[in-house]
Amino acid sequence: MLLVVALVLGLGSVAMAGATAGRASPEERRERMAAVLAVMGALVTGFGVILFFAANWSDIPRWLRVASLIAGMALLYGLGYYLREVRRTNLHVAHALIFLGTLLFGASLFLVGQIYHVQAHDPMGFLIWAIGCLSVAALVRSGPIAALGLLVLIAWIAHEVIDLAGAVEETAVLLPVVLTLFGIALYGLGTGASQWFAPLRFERPMRMIGFPLVLLGIFPFTFRFVHQTGFFDDPLTLTEAKILMWGFAAAALVGSVLLALQFRVRRTSPAEAVVLAAAGLLVILAVVAPEVRESGGELAGSEATVYPLLFNVLLGVLAVGAIVVGFLNDEVWLANAGVVWVGIDVIARFFDPSWSMLERSLVLIPAGLVAIAAGYLLDRRRQMPGVAT
Image (cartoon, rainbow, N blue to C red):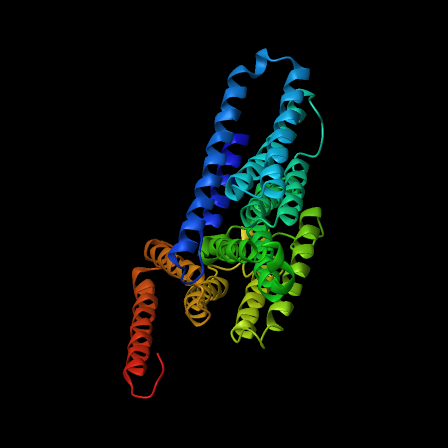
């Protein structure tokens, strides 16, 4: 299980390392490719080492296991520091070694706990790993390590919600809500407080992880059956999981406010802040003020309609808005993310059985015609004399 989690988190951070925003010169592309190859090599080497130890783990004495883990981390961090700060050569290799050290640190947390049968709060390992990753990322100014730390933090959030929720049904509702709020906080803080996070190389990982997380969180709520399953009994009853939700709601609010205040340097920031704040408000309302409740063991009302429609509109606005904002601010990754989510949304709506074929057609046809009309108007404006392209 640990190998699977580490693989997902590691590959996600490699993808973050290779992402670009805007046009790059050939030299910049070579630099980024070298960085990606170095990090990817570190990742593959790390998994090879983990598999080697796993194959012989039971035959290695306990003290030697712990010593090997500590020595491995010391060697990786020490060699990375030497190449980076002392010799100041092979910087990409140095960065890859430090990246590998953060992966080994996370694996060591779980392996040592397994060796000594430590009884602790299970999600705490991910939180400690995330804090370690983010601390190292701040020290070495590393975007990929920051991305790894944020992905580990998401794993902690998911594990925490699953652990704190009283039932599977509560988890199914609160997890996407908390992830949405965390995504809003990441994107809002990364954009609105870029003057603080950019020098640490945290800005792009925060934004490039935060935005897809928002859409991933609200996506389940676009389906009608989610609002009709009776998951929302006693929505105002305070639980530990809901306290966690309100904490992330506060962080999302702060992020949205800081984003809105960026209007002087980013003209799209007020609109972005409004849409993100609306997303946060809507997911919270879906929990505390559900459209369909259980009454006497039976679902009150027939079918949920208002919330599914609102969430579908919100998802469309976020996806299309990302394309527009990406082009206006020359952020290719954001426009690409919007295109991907438009495709996901169209496929989901086409196959969604909770709406009739006629209802789906009445949504998809106008939406497609509006997109065609917008493209026509933009193209016509480009061809008009005196209008800058």
